[in-house]
Amino acid sequence: MSRQFTAVYKKTGKWYSAWIEEIPGVNTQGRTLKEAKENLKEALVLVLETGKFLVKSSDSKILREPIFVSL
Image (tube, rainbow, N blue to C red; front, side, top):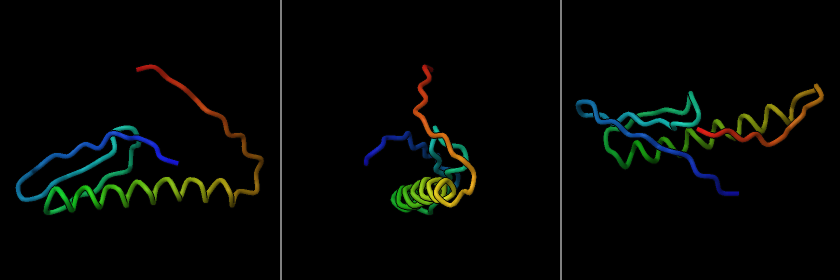
């Protein structure tokens, strides 16, 4: 499944900071824009996979449903 997110990049000095606008905690950096983009994709995948793992490994009853908001 493919999903779209908004990546934000900011150059500060010799480094690029990068984060996903929609998901707090998905952030990284790189010496080049290319490296920051690669690191950000990896960070996003790890956060999403961790969320799925935590749901699967939970002993509690889990309720999952779509949620929609307008901004």
